[in-house]
Length: 133
Image (cartoon, rainbow, N blue to C red):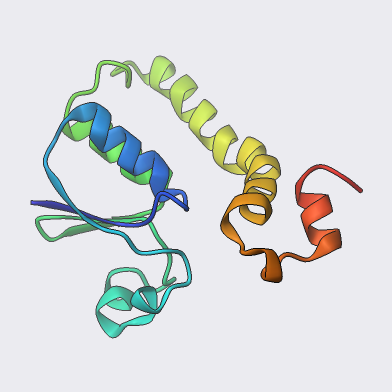
């Protein structure tokens, strides 16, 4: 059975969403980023970076949300993930832009405003992450 390690409070949200849309059965290990669970020898053996998300598909381990989504799209023949070289390149382009462009700006604000408890937020860092200077 497919197993997902990752939290909805991380980039694992994308993988959770995709699995839900696909309607495939999976086991979910709700591991937060930088949590003690991601530091165990068993988890580090799957991902030496100690980061989520990670999937285990009957022994095939894959990390990085974008790679996981592309793998799942291929495995379950998702029509929205085209087979043609150029069409697929455009979808990959948008996924990569989301990871490196949009997420960089949106993600920092989200992390500071939603994930970190108030006592861990830093004024200047939170302001910068929310688009301020």
